Structure formats: structure tokens, C-alpha cells
Image (tube, rainbow, N blue to C red):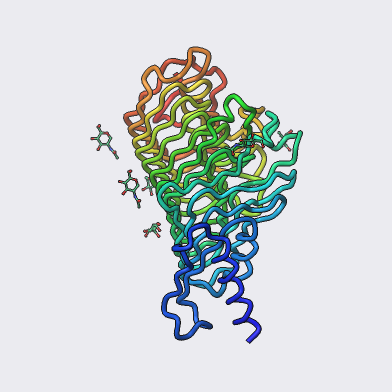
Length: 380
Ligand SMILES: *[C@@H]1O[C@H](CO)[C@@H](O)[C@H](O)[C@H]1NC(C)=O
Ligand SMILES: *[C@@H]1O[C@H](CO)[C@@H](O)[C@H](O)[C@H]1NC(C)=O
Ligand SMILES: *[C@@H]1O[C@H](CO)[C@@H](O)[C@H](O)[C@H]1NC(C)=O
Ligand SMILES: *[C@@H]1O[C@H](CO)[C@@H](O)[C@H](O)[C@H]1NC(C)=O
Ligand SMILES: *[C@@H]1O[C@H](CO)[C@@H](O)[C@H](O)[C@H]1NC(C)=O
Ligand SMILES: *[C@@H]1O[C@H](CO)[C@@H](O)[C@H](O)[C@H]1NC(C)=O
């Protein structure tokens, strides 16, 4: 009884926060309110807490112009199975120096959508100080898409994350479609470590039609199996990355495909980073149909001597890179003359069974420190 009462108050509260009198929370299938066929709308500065408190009792949660208070998470991590979450209008977050996350969504059979014109505005410029995660203000991570099983996220538009945007962890069968992460203002206002998608310990993940404007990896797969990134655009950042792999509890990357995507105005195009002296494996990675333009440093960089930075010391073979396919990469003249086209630094037995075809990356210099380069390619 008390549960029903608190649920009804939430609906009343939410109704009170809605500006237009015609817009009421629609309650569908009312006969059994304790059951979940119920749509709940939450707004304003109490919306996040109310949504969080009643997340188990709503089959559809509409977040309409929610203002999340500073230092708190819009926490939808205990959703009932098959819940739909819809963002409407502008979602904002108050300012506080803390680790976040600002948004967390978990569950099974979850559908997350941005309504037309919806805008997730963490307004990261308030934290940007050019130092990212290495110092200065403590910056909240934006979105933990963790433990999402058989779920979809569609049409979210996110602007200016304080630091990393989307962390995908513990997910299985997650599909993200048409997400935009627009941290472009960070190019001039001190955005740093604004990774688009960081993926770990997840399986069967598809990210399609993403647009990422940022200042770090567009996508970084640190571990996981059967991950596909397709039809994406990456601009301003560090490109399409595997890793860094190594030094975590899960150091296996298996079957990752980047396809039909564009990397422009970025530091790197394609990068695979295996940490020196660590163990793990990177296998069955494919880059296919990748267009590069305006790459400042490395067109393609594959290294087994990553050590907190690129190309540090003697490479090791403890994280072998096997069954790598790089095909149809178009980047004629894409690399700056001060950069390098293709750099491969492998341990003595670190890299095997590679396929390399129709790869045209030019404009930069030849790196002189390549080692143990599989015969299918070269660093020239
Ligand atoms: C971001 O925050 C700053 C400082 O509070 C404010 O001036 C600016 O209008 C905000 N921008 C957006 C897009 O909300
Ligand atoms: C994603 O965007 C593309 C291009 O605008 C569009 O054709 C497609 O229907 C969208 N997909 C979804 C699921 O909204
Ligand atoms: C890889 O993931 C996709 C998307 O979830 C799925 O359709 C496909 O069956 C998976 N492949 C394997 C081998 O499991
Ligand atoms: C890697 O291990 C070797 C052998 O133990 C050691 O000499 C070397 O300094 C290590 N490299 C790094 C970067 O830690
Ligand atoms: C070599 O790579 C191909 C293509 O990725 C794969 O089908 C094959 O199984 C691999 N062979 C070995 C010995 O790993
Ligand atoms: C690679 O490009 C060639 C020539 O443009 C095309 O025939 C082939 O289908 C492409 N392969 C893939 C896997 O996209």
C-alpha cells in the first residue's frame, strides 16, 4: 500500500512540474496500477530523483526538461525489464567537481530514445581546463551505459561532456544508433580526454551512425567480444582505437570491426595499442572501408610498446595482435607532412596472420623505428 501511495505521489508531482495543462502523464492500462504498464513523466529539478525512485514501477519513463542537481547521478540503473526511457527537451546537470557519472542506465530489454530535438546538455565547458583526467578540476564522467542486456539506445544528442562521454561495460547485445557526441567547442575551450565511446568487458555491441566531435579516442575498445562500429564520423580526436589493452582485469579483445566510417581532423586515424610487458590478446580485429583526412600524427599506428604514451621503448609480445585485417582504407594525402603514414612496432612474435589490402595512406613521413612488421605491409 505504501508503495502504491508513493508511486501515485510521484505521478502527481510530475504532473505538477509540467508547464502545459494539456500535457499530463499518460497512464495506460490502468486497471492494475501495481503492475507496470504505466507511463511516467518527470520534469524539472525534482525529476531525476523522482524518476530514480519510481524506476521500477514505470514501463515508460519520459524525462522532459529534467534539471539534474549538482553532484548527483540521473540514476536509472535498477530499471525493470523492458522499460522504455525517452529524453525530451533539454536535460541539464548542475556543476560540481566530482567523478560522476552524470547519467547511468542499466537493465535488460531497455529502449532508450531521444525524442525529436532532445538535447543532453552537461555543459562540460564549466569543467574544461585543458587537463582532462590528469589534473585541475575533478570532472564527472558523463554516461555509464553499464550492464545493458538486449537493449537499444537511439538518437541521443549530447553536447559538451566534462570528460569521457559514454562508458560501455558489462553489456551484451547493446545497439546504439545515431548518437551524436558533440564536444567540438572543447577544441578551443580546453576539452581534454573527452573520449566518445570507451568499451570494456562487453559482447555483441553495435554502434552505428555515431557522430563524435571530441579531443580523445572516438572509440576505444579495451576489452570485449564481437563489437562493431559502423557508419560513424569521428572528428577532432584520436581516431578509432583498440586499447590501450593491458593492465586491467580483462585484457582480451576478440572480433572487433570498424567499418564504413570516416576519421577527419584527428591526431590518429587507426590505432591499436598493446601495453608493453603486459599479457592479453587482440585478435580478429577488422578495419574496413575507413576514410581518413587531415590526420596530424599517425595515419595507422599499431604498437606493442604503448606505455601511457605511444611508442615507448622495446615492444613485447605478451598481448599478441593476430588475425588483423585492414582493408579499403582511403587516405591519400591525409597525413600531415610532419606525421607518419603507417607505423607498426611489434614484439618478436607479437603480430601474425595479418591481412592488409587496398590501404592508401600517404602525406606523412616514414617512421624509422618499425619492428617485426608482418610481410603484408611495411612502414614506407
Ligand atoms: C554553460 O555554463 C555557462 C556557465 O554557467 C553558461 O554561461 C552557459 O550559458 C552554459 N551553456 C549552455 C549551452 O548551457
Ligand atoms: C539513423 O540515421 C540515418 C541517417 O539519418 C537514418 O537513415 C536512419 O533511419 C536512422 N536510424 C534510426 C534507427 O533512427
Ligand atoms: C555479434 O553481434 C551481433 C549484434 O548483437 C549479432 O547479431 C551477431 O550474431 C553476433 N555474432 C556472433 C558470432 O555471436
Ligand atoms: C619490461 O620488462 C623488461 C624485463 O623485465 C624490463 O627490462 C623493462 O624495463 C620493462 N619495460 C617497461 C616499459 O616496463
Ligand atoms: C588467419 O586469419 C584469417 C582471417 O582473419 C582467419 O580466417 C584464419 O583462421 C587465421 N588463421 C590462423 C592460423 O589464425
Ligand atoms: C573494398 O573496395 C573494393 C574496391 O573499391 C570493393 O570492390 C570491395 O567490395 C571493398 N571491400 C569491402 C569489404 O568493403
